Amino acid sequence: MRSISQHSPANPSQSREHPEKTSTWSIQPALILGIAVLGTQALASIIAAYGLLTPSISWFWAAVVWAFCVPLFFVQDRVKLAAYRIFDPQERGLLIGERE
Image 1 (cartoon, rainbow, N blue to C red):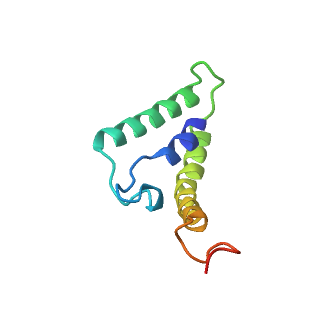
Image 2 (image 1 turned 30 degrees about the horizontal axis):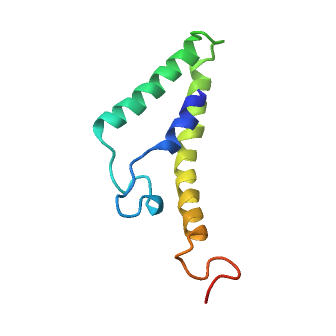
Image 3 (image 1 turned 90 degrees about the horizontal axis):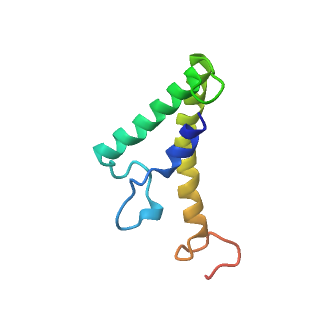
Protein backbone atom coordinates (compact mmCIF):
# COMPACT_ATOMS: atom_id res chain seq x y z
CA MET A 1 0.00 0.00 0.00
CA ARG A 2 3.04 2.25 0.23
CA SER A 3 2.85 2.41 -3.55
CA ILE A 4 -0.21 4.68 -3.41
CA SER A 5 1.46 7.42 -1.39
CA GLN A 6 4.72 7.15 -3.31
CA HIS A 7 3.24 7.15 -6.78
CA SER A 8 0.71 9.97 -6.61
CA PRO A 9 3.06 12.98 -6.07
CA ALA A 10 5.12 11.90 -9.08
CA ASN A 11 2.40 12.81 -11.57
CA PRO A 12 4.20 14.41 -14.54
CA SER A 13 1.19 16.32 -15.88
CA GLN A 14 2.61 19.81 -15.69
CA SER A 15 2.70 22.89 -17.90
CA ARG A 16 5.29 23.24 -20.64
CA GLU A 17 5.98 26.94 -19.99
CA HIS A 18 6.57 26.78 -16.23
CA PRO A 19 6.45 23.11 -15.22
CA GLU A 20 7.50 23.83 -11.66
CA LYS A 21 4.81 26.45 -10.99
CA THR A 22 1.60 24.79 -12.10
CA SER A 23 -0.94 22.68 -10.34
CA THR A 24 -1.01 18.96 -10.96
CA TRP A 25 -4.26 19.30 -12.88
CA SER A 26 -3.34 22.26 -15.11
CA ILE A 27 -2.85 19.84 -18.03
CA GLN A 28 -4.62 16.49 -18.15
CA PRO A 29 -2.14 13.61 -18.43
CA ALA A 30 -2.29 11.20 -21.35
CA LEU A 31 -4.89 8.46 -21.03
CA ILE A 32 -2.23 5.74 -21.14
CA LEU A 33 -0.43 7.35 -18.18
CA GLY A 34 -3.64 7.46 -16.18
CA ILE A 35 -4.36 3.82 -16.97
CA ALA A 36 -0.82 2.83 -15.99
CA VAL A 37 -0.95 4.71 -12.68
CA LEU A 38 -4.41 3.47 -11.69
CA GLY A 39 -3.54 -0.05 -12.83
CA THR A 40 -0.40 -0.23 -10.70
CA GLN A 41 -2.30 1.18 -7.72
CA ALA A 42 -5.08 -1.38 -8.13
CA LEU A 43 -2.51 -4.17 -8.45
CA ALA A 44 -0.71 -2.95 -5.31
CA SER A 45 -4.03 -2.92 -3.43
CA ILE A 46 -4.84 -6.47 -4.55
CA ILE A 47 -1.38 -7.70 -3.56
CA ALA A 48 -1.70 -6.07 -0.14
CA ALA A 49 -5.24 -7.30 0.47
CA TYR A 50 -4.61 -10.90 -0.58
CA GLY A 51 -1.08 -11.09 0.78
CA LEU A 52 0.95 -12.11 -2.23
CA LEU A 53 4.60 -12.21 -1.03
CA THR A 54 3.62 -10.21 2.06
CA PRO A 55 1.27 -10.56 5.03
CA SER A 56 -2.27 -9.70 3.96
CA ILE A 57 -4.35 -6.81 5.18
CA SER A 58 -8.13 -6.57 5.04
CA TRP A 59 -9.95 -4.64 2.33
CA PHE A 60 -11.08 -2.26 5.07
CA TRP A 61 -7.47 -1.23 5.74
CA ALA A 62 -6.73 -1.01 2.03
CA ALA A 63 -9.64 1.45 1.76
CA VAL A 64 -8.32 3.39 4.78
CA VAL A 65 -4.97 3.79 3.04
CA TRP A 66 -6.70 5.02 -0.13
CA ALA A 67 -8.87 7.42 1.90
CA PHE A 68 -5.75 8.84 3.53
CA CYS A 69 -3.52 9.07 0.45
CA VAL A 70 -5.90 10.55 -2.11
CA PRO A 71 -6.68 13.77 -0.18
CA LEU A 72 -3.04 14.02 0.90
CA PHE A 73 -2.06 14.06 -2.77
CA PHE A 74 -3.97 17.32 -3.27
CA VAL A 75 -2.48 18.84 -0.10
CA GLN A 76 1.04 17.93 -1.26
CA ASP A 77 0.39 19.60 -4.61
CA ARG A 78 -0.59 22.88 -2.93
CA VAL A 79 2.43 22.75 -0.61
CA LYS A 80 4.65 22.16 -3.65
CA LEU A 81 3.25 25.24 -5.39
CA ALA A 82 3.69 27.36 -2.26
CA ALA A 83 7.29 26.20 -1.91
CA TYR A 84 8.03 27.12 -5.53
CA ARG A 85 6.60 30.59 -4.96
CA ILE A 86 8.59 31.10 -1.76
CA PHE A 87 11.94 29.89 -3.06
CA ASP A 88 11.79 31.27 -6.61
CA PRO A 89 14.53 33.90 -6.98
CA GLN A 90 12.49 35.68 -9.69
CA GLU A 91 9.66 36.52 -7.30
CA ARG A 92 9.99 39.68 -5.24
CA GLY A 93 9.68 40.14 -1.50
CA LEU A 94 8.87 36.59 -0.56
CA LEU A 95 11.98 35.93 1.51
CA ILE A 96 13.48 38.15 4.18
CA GLY A 97 16.39 40.20 2.85
CA GLU A 98 15.54 39.79 -0.82
CA ARG A 99 16.02 42.56 -3.32
CA GLU A 100 13.70 45.54 -3.20
